[in-house]
Image 1 (cartoon, rainbow, N blue to C red):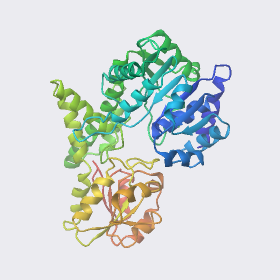
Image 2: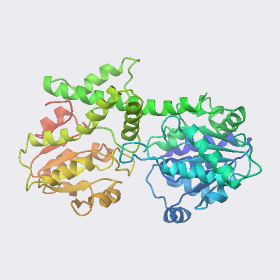
Image 3: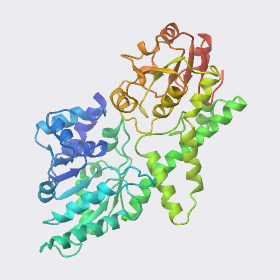
Image 4: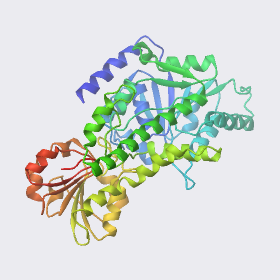
Length: 463
């Protein structure tokens, strides 16, 4: 935390001689709140807008509705210094700011397509309240061609309002500026990104966006200026490729279990090739969260709708959907019948350092265990509140990771939180009925688990 804070403080100094901009951000979720807090840290004047009145009131009181390391300190500091404000009045915000950033959600609908209703609503409100030259920056992940679609909606809204100041599209431009923030390290990712991708059509919008990101330009971080269509494709292609690496290594893990190879050593050897690289080659029980599953499915649907089969991505999605059930298979190698047994679950979120349970392996595995008559005791450092909204009282919520073990017939590890990595193995063995650990994240050393007498099942490795 101290390292991240120092980085943020250093970065904010770069704006000292630059003109402060007035920015409104519509949609105060993970992306919107992190983006707003970071722009405010650079010295810009930011107002964050959301239709959820309770969320806005909580933020005004200094209560952060999501867990993200370092975010609370960043929000509170900039709110106290007057650079970061919160409101439900999107109309006023649009009229008073020169850059409007759209960061609302685009979840999949029942047809497995991105639901653009919230984005379209923001675009219409923007057009209805446009009173000066303003850049509309889209950070929401929308299908390719989305910028053109939003431009049309905005222009139609302007014409309906008969706003005399507006003459076609020259008084506004839709810019595609995809985010590449990882939950759990979002602030660090914003302040020290690999690249910034900006899709623009005019020199005016390009200059606005370069000024917006001046602190990063000053640090030498590349700004890729391209078309909106390219920027939209880069976002989807990046996430789809990362998902492909994860599903590939998980498929290899299945083969390693059959032939007695160790997937971790296989991944290490693969990653030494610079053409492959080691990132995202960690075997486990699949990817989750709000981005990779949704974006892969959107590309599949988009391609099939235009005559492209998207065979590779359909395989990636299939592997990921079936991967969590490998925990059930590994568990049944020990307990063919689960009814009446009690299992401890460590980890509910889709990854560590977040409270996000969307598309998490735990939210798929736990209902299956309950269906088979098992009793469940769960613990997660940050995900308990969100999990309870979904699981209700069907499971027992333990006070800490050790108490979750008491009286359990086995431990299932579903998220790689640091507290689980550092857990006392002797205490695990002491508290369980039987020393059985089914590890979906490969946290422990095989030889150590064997020497301590555990029945230890992991992914792509065999004792």
